[in-house]
Amino acid sequence: MSVFYPLQLFADWLTYSVFNIAPQSLLGSAVDFFIFDTLKIFILLSVIIFAVSIIRSYLPPEKIRAVLSHKNKYTGNVIASLLGIITPFCSCSAIPLFLGFVQAGVPLGVTFSFLVASPMINEVALVLLLGMFGWKIALIYIVSGLIISILSGLIIGKMKVENLVEPFVYENSINRAIDLPNMSRRERLIYAKDYTLDILKKVWPYVLIGIGVGAWIHGYVPADFLVRYASGDKWYAVPLAVLIGIPLYSNAAGIIPLVSALTEKGVSIGTTLAFMMSVTALSLPEFMILKKVMKTRLILIFAGIVAVGITLTGYLFNAILR
Image 1 (cartoon, rainbow, N blue to C red):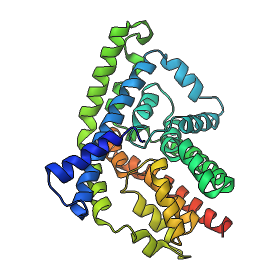
Image 2: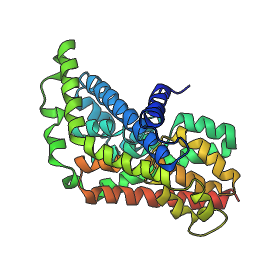
Image 3: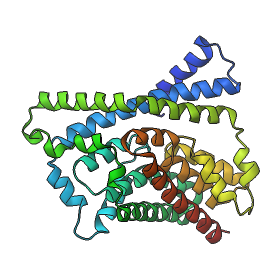
């Protein structure tokens, strides 16, 4: 049973009993999705930002920077991508760690490698793919996800776009904070609480807008839309799947059952996996949160690079697994 099952029960009760919306209606599906995802994302954000704040209060920024700012320019991106695999967060909840890396002085390209890898490559999804489709699909999934995250970070790092990050991110740098390792336990808790509230105050409108758009699509876009327009060998199937996946929101494990259903209905495996990667790595709620910490141009650069990588991976899957 999912840890968020009680939230789903609450969302169902509020939607169908309190608001008295018909359970099978499009409005009911959209409202239920909005309530559940709003609660889930804000709980995840609060817990993860708080936890990251506590953890980083014990880690001198020099140590974080030393590990991820390796002399070999490729090593930092590889380490960040591997770290993303073992921190199985959704795209929205990976952002606090992304901010922590930036504020510790880690190169921007390296932090983007983490931001892509964490939601895209999920060990639960890997196990599910292994069980449903075999080792070949599971291996291609993890290797392609690593390649996309590493290359995305390297390209963004080469572009020197630090000026496109909002100034407050660098102003909050822990390089100039009080000597965190010498704080008492109470001071660490107060620091983590204050930092968590500060970040939530900055991002909550963007989170709600992103979830709202995703809820509308969840409720009003027909479930067979992707099957209707992206099945078979149509040349546009993969990029269309990527575009459809962006407004949706889920983690990799949550989207796997849909991947299985789509393949059973005739959608190519490359197309369905491109859809899954798009949902997990390029979610609209993530963009709404990122809009508060970076300029639109950088978001478009990030989304464009990752979308191209996912699209090429989808075509590769379809070519290999005919």
